[in-house]
Image (cartoon, rainbow, N blue to C red; front, side, top):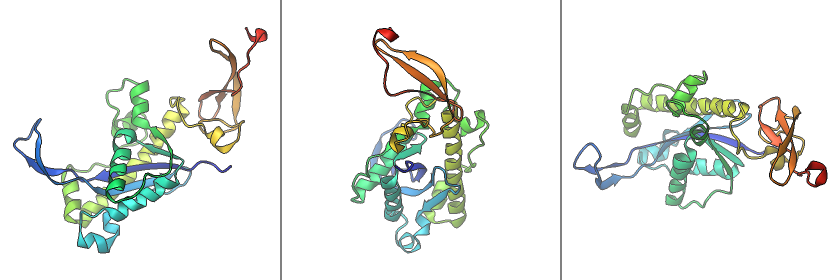
Length: 254
């Protein structure tokens, strides 16, 4: 079996445009323009280059209608349909659902099944940091920082078709994916992703580390449950723990 395809991605969307009676804690009276995708950046884990797909790259359709994200959404759908595992920060609550919404709007079916790793959920589960935002994680883990956007004008600039704004948005999006990859590896190699998809099971290599696929494993003694005992291993590459599949039971292990 081949190694699973792991997609790291991040999307950027427009705000919802609508009418309100106030500025704070208010209901939207009427939506004038729903949110759509401006761009997304992605990287196949194990490859060196991070790619970006944006509306302005599809020049003909973009010139006709700056709100038409059909080709951007279609490109993201093709990637997610190909992926075995997808990684995003707050992906379970935002990126995945935003992507699915646009897939449905454009008549695309649900992508083929994939497993998800949400680095935000992992940090919220394991840590009590001052902030779990991607920029803060990059800072506290010494991995780098996000590109400074200069504020909301970057989004309005892209929506107006400004090329300088688009270039900065694409650079911002790419850096988010590069930073996300670093956060993912930091969490994985620290042993913090306890529910990581089992790569050894997916490749059929029963001697590999379930988290990173390494063969540099060492025994770390037994692990006991109420009914069984299992041999525990620790990976020397990513420091994560795993147990052999078959539990030893019976009087010998009582």
